[in-house]
Length: 329
Length: 186
Image 1 (cartoon, rainbow over the protein chains, first blue to last red):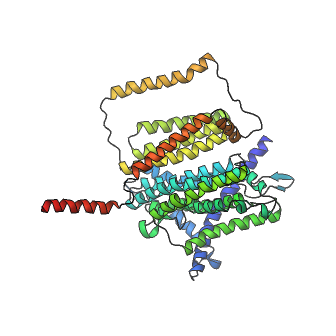
Image 2 (image 1 turned 180 degrees about the horizontal axis):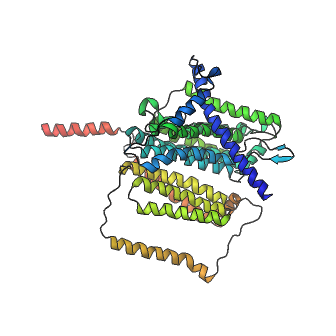
Image 3 (image 1 turned 60 degrees about the vertical axis):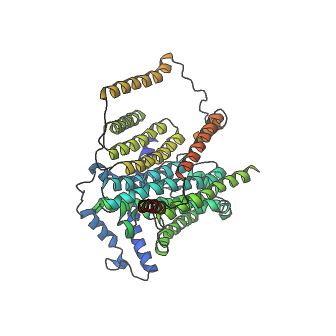
């Protein structure tokens, strides 16, 4: 039993790593295609059918490009920073149930690496550590634009961590558990049971905070091309730069999974239909990240702070208080 | 298995904190501090205190991030900081005594052998629930006092930082310069 469990866990880890690093590549392709569609362009077209092989071309380019570490940069930290972003993104995935449990060759598989009973706290904590990647990378690269990006990363991180935590409190009070499996079972009764109906404010707040957490437009301040070049990525080249991107896209996928599990019923009762709907809902949230990028401008850092501390945080606190009163009476 | 994990993380944590203390490079010190704090959470996970482990990660990533912000403002983080050591002998002596005291404090109960769990873990209750129960019964007053202290600190912070918040600092600077110029003319 012990050996079987050991082997099963290793297989799960390898599958998740492979699937999501591949998906991160496809994520860039989807992003370019969808942005192109919304801006009436064609996007990548020349490499392979519909430009699908563009991913392979990009991969070859990233892997074979010269890896430059600037003379004045702090070497060890500069080198480790991209690894932090990518590694923490995949570590967070350990507590996410990707599909309902299913039986294959008479062996029941739980598609979750570790069903810890503090699942959601663990995911948020480890995703938060992911912010150290851009921060360390930009501090170590001794570049003025990167330094600006570091200051922004610290500011965004400290403020939006508060929103994520407070927004989650309402649903947590209702479910009474940190485990994502418990969240899913709480909403297993069908569409009427989804937490989004009882916690719409928490849902919107968490969704907004997810944009800050993954650093996507309109909160794309850490690497805002038109102000600070590529922010933390200015001095990076080749695969180190690519690792930042794998981390970012993997994070987008994982946070989409988490939103669906928390607020939109997850995989429901665990049937095949439920599993399909789960993936569809997840894809919608991933698509929404790209849609927002095409439709919205980036906001200024001071507007971001204003939004966080003067609008979202009071709303989140109110939401917790109201939930408490409703649950008490 | 547990022993391997324990010794690995023990070594990692000690090395990280050693780097924090010994280096004079702000960026190394801060990164090592953050890494050490995160590695400590491994001990909580090993002991089965998942909740505290996750809280350790969340709290200290935020706290060290705030330190980074200060580091960014005060130092050039890519250079060594030139420290001013007035009396290395005194620092050496004091830190030695402090370390001895800490060892004495923590080993004293082990020698007398009277460590007992006042609130032993209950089987079948999740550990976030257990923390909640103890926090809101036995330790309610310390918990609330801590909350009030944080509130005081927060209000103090707002008062300190919020002076003249609705005025623009650049405009104020201009006004001062105008006044100075007028004085000079007079």
